[in-house]
Amino acid sequence: MALISVVQSEIVERRKLLTQSEMLDGISLATILPGPVAVNVIAYVGYKLRGGVGALVCAGTVILPGFVLMVALTAAYLRWGEVPAASKLFLGFIPAVTAVIVSAVWGMALKTLRGLPEILFACAAFLLLLLKGNFYITLIIIVGAGVTGWVAFYLLAKGARDEASAPRAPGKGGKEVKLLSLGTPLAVAPLLALDAGLAVKLFATFAGMSVLLFGGGFVFIPLIQHIVVQEHSWLTRQEFFDAIALSQVTPGPILNVAAFIGYKVMGIPGAAIATVAIFLPPALVMLVSAHFLAQVRNSPHVKAVLRGIRPAVIGMIAAAAWNVGSTASPTWQSAAIFLAALGALLSKRVGVVWVIPSAGLAGLLLY
Image 1 (cartoon, rainbow, N blue to C red):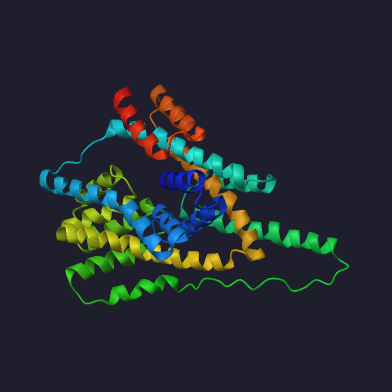
Image 2 (cartoon, one colour):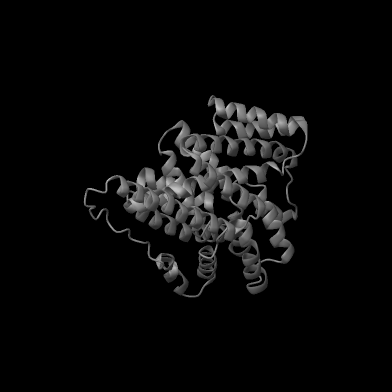
């Protein structure tokens, strides 16, 4: 959600390339589809701006810095067996990241929470995710908000309109909404039927796991550990835990761990193969879903569903801000960095790309 908040600030607030509702629709899709939520949202943004090429460029460039740094750290780790520590930097990063998310929530709420129903949707999603946060709760929030939105903003509103216009014969309105085929994820199935070979095995393994990834990278850890440690013996148990640690001190999603595993198996080509395989299939599913959403989003049924989902997404992002903030060091330094970052962001005088590095430097100086 931190990365999503950065994208929202730059693309919606500062550059105004997408509307708030378009951004929230992308987050809603990414939340219920397989794959890393942040990368899928960025692929969606690229698709909305420049089609398939835009999606490729945006997703590729957001993954590339973390990939390069992960490969470099992996090479150092495999040579010297040490995990670099950057604790002071991260003590500064965490309150600033919290401020970024809070700023994004504030901007979204001002434009989306237009009445009491939307506010209630957002508060319910916030409390549910805060009290019991997991993939199933996330799915319940999205589906429940969509169904409730359809009932509240379509059925009840339609009943009120029909009652107000009773003398007129009601016409049969709107086109029937077409549902996205459940077979979309199978578009990547041919990858699993390629000939044997280490490169193909590596790609097929990670591509197959990627379409099973629901609920975020941390939910994915037990599955990937079982496959790469117990099943294929590509890593030892300790190496796997160290790979997870390395993924946490590099920018980007925790799934950068794929680069570590691929590098251990086949060097730099293996790192590239594993990284492409873990991110590409979910991104393709996201783009297909975004294409269908664009075709049906003007339907009154879909509008009502999205009107329920959007405030729920805002509540979910607010819960992420709370969870991230709770990991910050409980000191005056953290409070000062948070307030300074939030003030700079809300004033819109300083971009997010300057806030996070400045907070890291502040962490080095203050802690």
